[in-house]
Length: 41
Image (tube, rainbow, N blue to C red; front, side):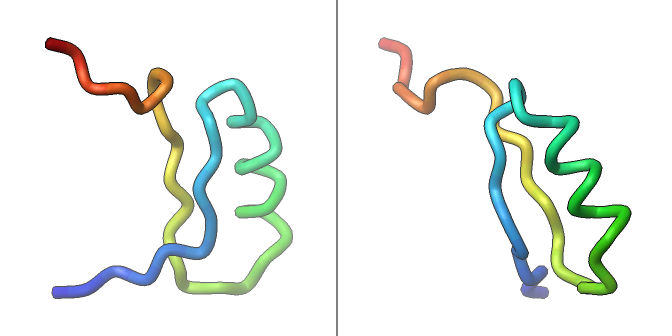
């Protein structure tokens, strides 16, 4: 199964992601990134 991703946001921009979700009629998903994306050792 493939889920279309409309946009990705850092967690700090969750409010902006929520605004986009409310205004768009897209069926794509919005992703919230947690952390800086660096892999821990």
